[in-house]
Image (cartoon, rainbow, N blue to C red; front, side):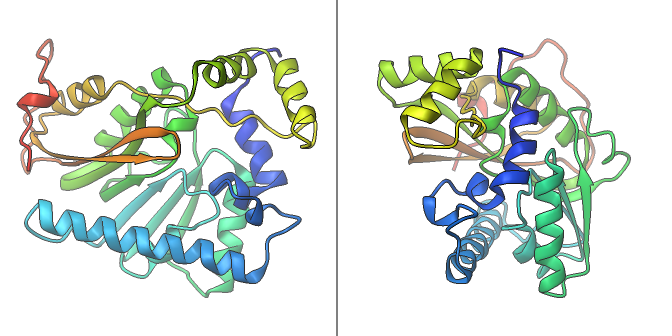
Amino acid sequence: MLRDDSDSSWAKWGEQNPYFGVLSDDKFRREKISEEAKAELFETGRIHVDRILSIIAMQFGGLVARKSVLDFGCGVGRLVVPFARVFERVTAADVSKGMLETAEQNCSELSIKNVDFVHSDDRLSKLTPRKFDFIHSYLVLQHIPTQRGERIIDQLIELLNEEGILAIHFPFVRRDSLVRQSVHILRKNFLPISILANVLRGKRWNEPFMQMNCYDVDRILVLISEHGIRDVFMEIVDAGGFISAFVFARKPTRAMGRVEGKHLWAADLRSR
C-alpha cells in the first residue's frame, strides 16, 4: 500500500502513542508522559467543554438538552470525561480501538460509568438508530479525507434530535509554506517518503502519518442547510498553521426536510 490510509494510521496511533495522537506535544508521548502531563491534558478538555457549552448558551439563547451527547473521534477521552459530568449519557466513538480502550480505562479510573464506547466507521453503523441532543467533534475531521468527512457530517446531522445541536471543527486554510504543503502531499500519497521523513526527523521509521485536510466552508454550510437547518453560528480559529471553523448548528423542532438543489451560502445564514 503506497497511499496513507487514515483509518490504519489512527489505529496505529491508538496502539503506539494515544495521548500524543490527541495533542501533538512531545510531553504527551508514551515514553515521556507523566501523571502531571496527563492531568494537564484532561484539564484542557474540561476548559474546552465549559467554553463550548457557554457558547451554545449564549448563541442559541439557552442550554443544550443534557440527556445524550456523542463525542465523535473521542480519542483517549479528553472531552468524554467532562461531558460525562454534565450529560446523563455519553457515547464515545472512535475509529481506533486502541484509543477507545485507553478512553475506557481513563473513565474506569475516575469511576465514570455513564459512557458507551463505540468503534466507529464511515457509515456510523454502530451508532444508528440512536439520536443525540448534542453531537460534538473537535480536532478530528482534519485527519479524515474531505469527501469521506463530508459524508460523515451528513450522517451525524441525521443523528440529531429535534432542537439538537451540532458542533464540528475543521480547518479550511493551510498557512504552511508551499514546500511544507508539497511534502505533506508526498507523504500522504507515497508512504516511502513518509518513512524517509520520519528517519530524517529522528522519529521511529514506522511512526504513523498524521493527515491534515482542509474543508470547503461553503460546502459544509450548504450540507447543513440541506437538512433544513437555518440556525447556525460559526467561530473562526487561527492557530497551529491553520485557520479553522467551529460550526454550531441547531436542528429545527420540525424538520423542514432536505432542500434538494438549493444552495444556501454562508452569507445567507443567520450570523451573530
